[in-house]
Structures are given as structure tokens and as C-alpha cells.
Length: 167
Image 1 (cartoon, helix red, strand yellow):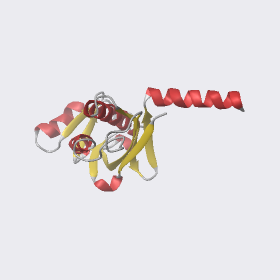
Image 2 (cartoon, rainbow, N blue to C red):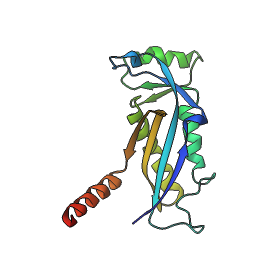
Image 3 (cartoon, one colour):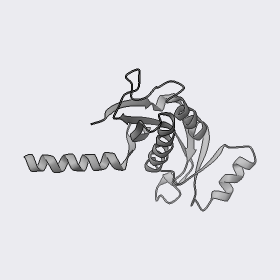
Image 4 (cartoon, rainbow, N blue to C red):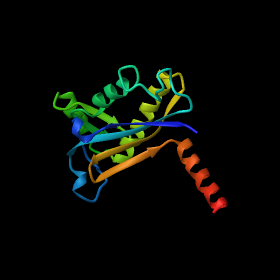
């Protein structure tokens, strides 16, 4: 069993960025903005010397916080496959936007991309003692997406299988 610890970096924190869902059949194909929020679930089999899963200060969550601000604070997120990518990148070249090229611009992609970066940072900072279990990305209070580690999904499946055997 693992210890779990959560950190919420809410929508009110002001990670305001702009993007578009170029393939959407709705108004989402237009440039629009959100103040993204994130909820992290961290896990560790063993606690650190202070009895923590992860330090939420500079030496732990601080690098994740810095990355979140660099990636999402007053930036323009452009999907790698956006057919208008050259025009959107030109906004950055002209000093009109801080452009970030990302695999995709959905909440699902933001959750996965943030999970992968946070997990890399946490494993390095803790020597592999701690890992990211899941990341939830929210556009606002009504829409969010969660990306879970493969291990977390496997544990849930095993738990369901054992429950079925018992019940």
C-alpha cells in the first residue's frame, strides 16, 4: 500500500492561457482562454524523514509550480498538428504572445502532459521514492480531465477483480 498526498493548484491561481481546439465542430475552434487548475495526487511507499510523501515547498512542489507558470501563465498553447500553427507561431515571433507548442490542447492532453512533467520532477527530486499517481486538469468548475499512472489503473483493476471474487 502507498501513502497518498494531494496538492491543488486551483483555477483561482491565475494560470490564464489561450488555446483553440482546431478540429472542433463548435465555437471551441476559435481562440479562447481559461485559467487552468490542477489537482495532483502523489504517492510513496515510504514517507520522508519528516513523515511526508512530498515537500510542498521549494525542494518538492516548487519545481512543478515553476513549470506550471512557465507553461500556462499568459501563454498561447498551440497543438502540434494545428493547420494554423505557422500563423499562431508568428504571434510569438512578433512579440505578441508567449507560444507553447503542445501535443494537443484539450484538458485531457493538459492533464497527461502535466502528469508526465510532474512525475519526472518528483522522481528526480525524491530519488524515485515518490511518484505522481494522477493529475486532474480543470478548465473551470464544470469541466476537467484526469490522467492516471499505469500503476494506478492496474491497482484499481486488481482491486475490482478481488472485490468480485469476495462478493
